[in-house]
Figure: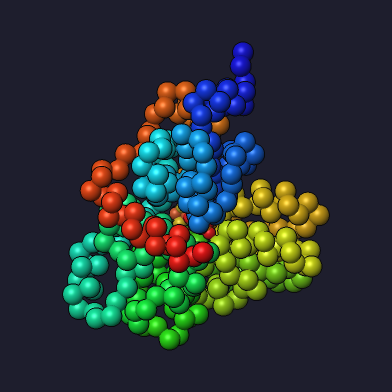
Length: 302
Ligand code: 13P
Ligand code: SF4
């Protein structure tokens, strides 16, 4: 009987497909993916790959962004139910309201948001390019949606701008507690603390490095330190250990798991490619509005 791995390989050739995977998906998916990366890298790769079909091993907003940027390609999600709760934590009414009340305003949207929200914003950012993009915006006032923690971190780094925050959050990062970080530091006093900016400001203040998933991997790989406490989702450990087989990595707590990313399995990748199911569909009215904020992100982060 054909193994799931050879089935995926065969289907990739038959369907002219490429597999993109985020660092938070299961190890076996990262191992077979053609490209693995953070949200920004994957959105760039989606534009550059020559294949007609993208199998996106990530959550809904990632597949939607790939489709918005590439309407001519078929984007399939191996698990249709893999969605990021934070992507739904911004309100169009609130955006309209803030726009009415605030002059000299840019609405800046974390890419972890629905296609519908992206229609109403000025520019998208990811955790790896938010600082660069917001610094470059001419507007003084920034309404940052949906993630409050990332918004507050970016605001702390760009004091010359005035920020308005939204109350969205990522449950995985928001639940990393400062006392747990202190306990981990006490248990591993030589370890550097590397955290994602979706963590709370208290956790961020206790860290040696704050950055996107790619930033965390690069920091650990380039560092002379041998031990690291990792304040983000555990899927990142696969690449951290692969790139740094002699270094030690510890999580802060045992709940650093994104259940949606973990829904994707090899069997689901094979099944989706075979049947070409779970194709991302974006209506053209939404796409032509939402694409502006994503294209602006790609332009401003060059
Ligand atoms: P990165 O862009 O840093 O990979 O983060 C994506 C994400 O979903 C974080 O929770
Ligand atoms: Fe969303 Fe958090 Fe999962 Fe990232 S880790 S996809 S922000 S729920």
